[in-house]
Length: 420
Image 1 (cartoon, rainbow, N blue to C red):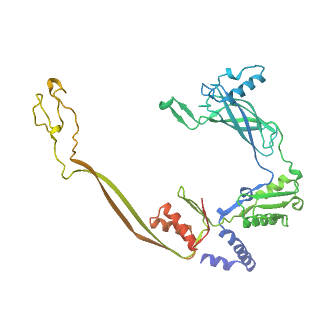
Image 2 (image 1 turned 90 degrees about the vertical axis):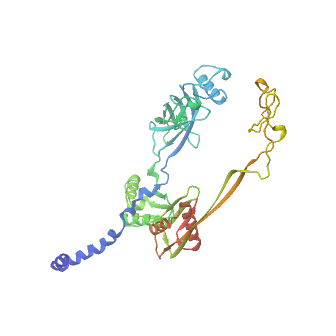
Image 3 (image 1 turned 90 degrees about the horizontal axis):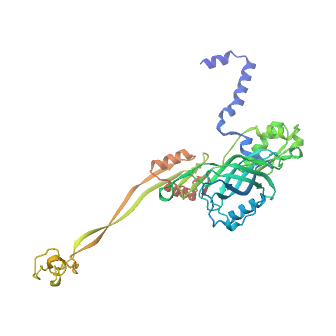
């Protein structure tokens, strides 16, 4: 009533303006803000990317945990390094217990200039037990074209440790992989000259035709003219000349900070090995009924001791005898010999050849058939209703996999089903 009274007091012009604001803001309020993302979060600029670097080197200063003598390339590398220092040694006379051969890897960021620092990772190549306490000697890092782009050197930082030896030892995490923060220095300029760009190409991280169209529409709406074109489901080209930007970096910054609504495809990913199921929120189902039952068969085999029917007692040659050779009542069923013990009385430890008991296997079969559980989903059911219904009927992750595959085969699942 208070709202109606307030509207009645507004002038006609003000009332019309208020209605226009309400009409145009309703779609924005109805739109889910959680599904609005920046273009920078879903795209990357073609030509602006990292580059992989790799190198080979030596880690020295280990506490007798380096490569063994059988790792010949470590000995050869050490001999070559010593030769560069002016020391000639024979590889056959070198023991490398404090030295280990390693590979060095790093990522060269875009627009890296000479002198920039890189984080490098050092990994053992031979049979070294641990790299704890080691120092990497200066090593060249090569790019895919074989050129040297950086140098690496420095003490290693380990994420694990080892104590003791053999069965009494303990090891936490890996001791053959370490890191050197800021251990690499860029030696070659690999920066991209953006001023030569005539077109800025945006590459979608998750290719989709609808998303590519929405990105192009958002850019065209920002510049109020046609400057962006969606070429396919993963690429959107922006013309630098048509955009009229002062510089390419400013154009990229302006484009990447645009906001648009993202639509994810309806998809279900199933990993049968681990029983993991991931369902998208846009998955819809047509009317479907699921009947799920549980049948288990258990077979158990146990062994019991039972008498053998018709088995006799003791034979005469196994009857107990006394020290003088006289028969005696010996319930043990073992024959005694005059020469088998002190005083002529003893046991010859002969096993009774006529046993009276045996192990008899007994097998039991238990069959449990639980009553079938029924679940029905109406038109337009979503993921929450599907999951809640499957939990209600007691379905496990393995059961859910089979049920989803059956629903997809029946045609009731309106989503892409990917089995890994």
